[in-house]
Image (cartoon, rainbow, N blue to C red; front, side, top):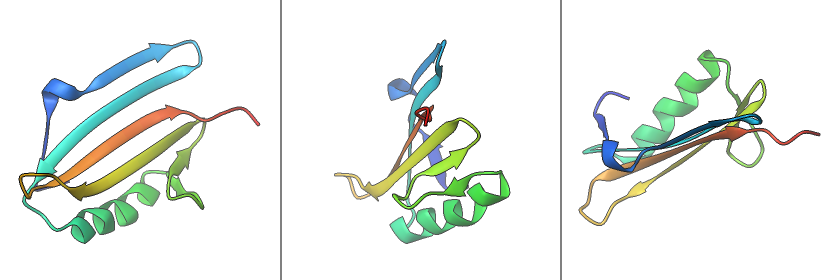
Length: 87
């Protein structure tokens, strides 16, 4: 999202037989609702379907997005991508 900058030192990426697991963080001088609104509009255009629990699903992956204020007053976004559990 424009206005957010990735916090590179804390990102985690793992690719295994059951799928990929990725955690990434970004921060910026934006309003929390502005960030949530951006992703609520952008993710469905990229094929992500919002789930009842607030996560997004696309094919066999789940994306969880947590947005809140950091201790320094910046808005932080935590992105977690993981394989969807088999039904």
